[in-house]
Amino acid sequence: MSDECIHGLEGGLCASCFPKAAPEIVPGVATRATRSKSAGRAPSLRSSPSPRTVTLGGPNPTLGTKTAAVKPVTIKAATGVKRVTSSKSAVDNVGEQRIYHVTHIRNLAGILSSGRLLADTSDAWTTRPPVDLSSAPQRAARRAAQVAGDDSASVASYVPFYLSPNARLWDSLLTESNDPRLSTEAHGSETYDFVILVSTVKKLRDAHDGAADVSAAAVAVTNGDAAGALTRFGTAPETADRMLRSLRADQESQKIREAELLVTESFPFELVTLVGVANDKVRDAVRTILEAGSYKPKVVVYPPWFHAVDETAAV
Image 1 (cartoon, rainbow, N blue to C red):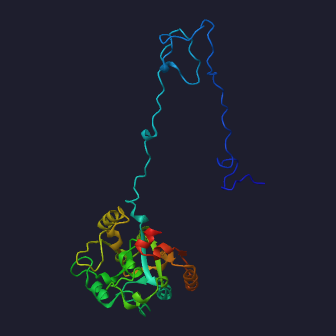
Image 2: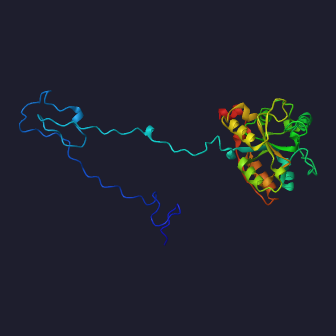
Image 3: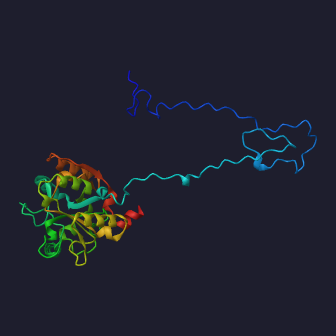
């Protein structure tokens, strides 16, 4: 019979399942005071030992004799211990940043069929999504906005992602706000009709590192609505990283709720790490849709993502 414990370690190597025997404690000298034979009365203050010369666990000094002062042992406080920290802080490690793409459940089958999320102006479209979340004016604005100035690609040639599950545009849907950027179909849908496709910056970068076409690896980060006139873009890897670190410094700020991460042309569905849904019924429906594909990401019921920011805070 194997000696392997429940943690997978053998031969008594697990400190939890095979704890070492406690060390034997040798009893110290009794601290009870013994009465001196020559002391028939209480000692005077002059002959009393100083409190500083009495050590715990040691023999009591003999009354009336001079006792050498014992230097107290100083124990350093825990705050003096040097903290061991990683070379990168959580803010600097932008690879851990999650990215979120909200879509309607009726669009999921088409995404699965093509194997990727497509940008609005992609030539790879065969049929448009059943439910368009953007209004016509918003779609036109994104097609006109350019990522890197004159003669550069338009915002609509990128697949958009949020940097927060509490993104402002998504929150407008949850609160039924009259946001002109959203279509009538989006406003008319129930909250549980939507699904959130989640990935990470690291997954995206790892995929781009192996891409043969360098142009297919273009990623941009914004500090607001990508179609906004005052929005700044980080298109070079260094500026995109710097902007991500700045946004990650405050996960509850309005800036990160308005920011976007843009992926040029398409985003492979196999990079989706999980699909967030509102309830068990939608989870079962999504799993049924995913059965048609070879790649099946985890489907997670996470209600807080489907409540408005104020409601989530109240919970």
